[in-house]
Amino acid sequence: MNNIKKYIKNIWAIMPMHTKKEKFYLNELKKHLNEYLDDHPQCSYDDIVQQFGEPKDIVVNYIQNSDENDLIKRMKLKSIIQKFLIFFSVTCTILAIRIGILWYDYIQDQKNSIIYEIETTITEH
Image (cartoon, rainbow, N blue to C red; front, side):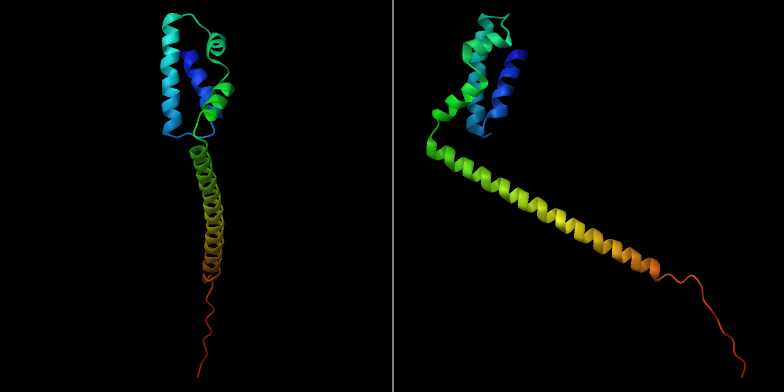
């Protein structure tokens, strides 16, 4: 069973998208792997690779058999989401730095406004 998890994990790592479709595909593949394991309980990882193919070949085959338009649309969406997250992260970082600078200036102003000594002058009339 450990070899199957490793095989699926290797495929998942190089899968360009991680949506329900890919999860469903890998669950179906896992069923076939478990059937193979039932028939060959002592199989190694290399045996699985020899029987089913290299993980990269599985991914290439999946992509070749996918709907091109759907795949392109999902990849564009992924790219847009990544760009938005990068923009949002950079904006939040800049905002946090700006707030930190303002807070530092405020603390310095408060330190400078503390009265440490009072000089009193008494004059007689």
